[in-house]
Length: 204
Image (cartoon, rainbow, N blue to C red; front, top):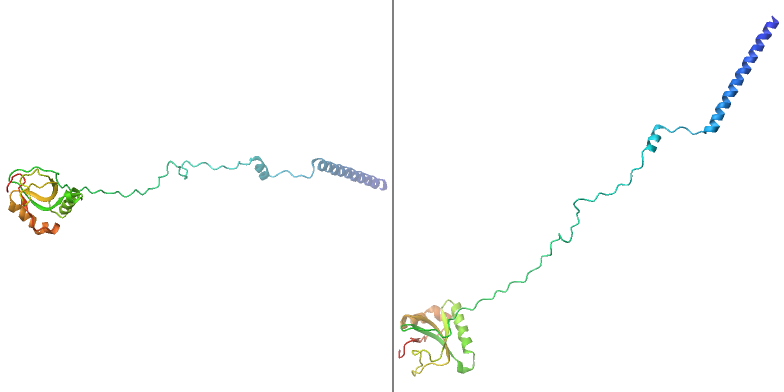
């Protein structure tokens, strides 16, 4: 019995020694792996994906197809104030300087301007006629210088070098006298004398 028990103890001792040897080898293998590979852990899936995606380049602004900046060609020129238009009034027609008359035509004289006075008789006569025309009375101005046989002074002598402001011609002396003495005419130019003449006929 005693020898049988000793054999069992020897077998158990050998098994324990073998197990210890295997465990020691396993520990050595693990230690060697750790020493050679290091303590780094494999990257997780998210880290792999992040490393695989390249960084996107910085986005550059796309130029607008319709820039808001207006070019010089599109700018409207500043509105310049135009100078006020000057209206020049046309002087009224005071008739020809030396009109022609026929027999039976009469005129009424409102005023006379002789050139002997040294003044611009023609300008004075035309200005007077223009004022009367502006008042609505059809006055005229003419130069009498002996060309009208029926135009004479109180002495019967022909009138020379004199500008005359007159009304007419009309068909009669009475007609022209009535026109000259009418209130409208006298308001335009006060001269109640109103002598009448038939320029183309002498002795009247």
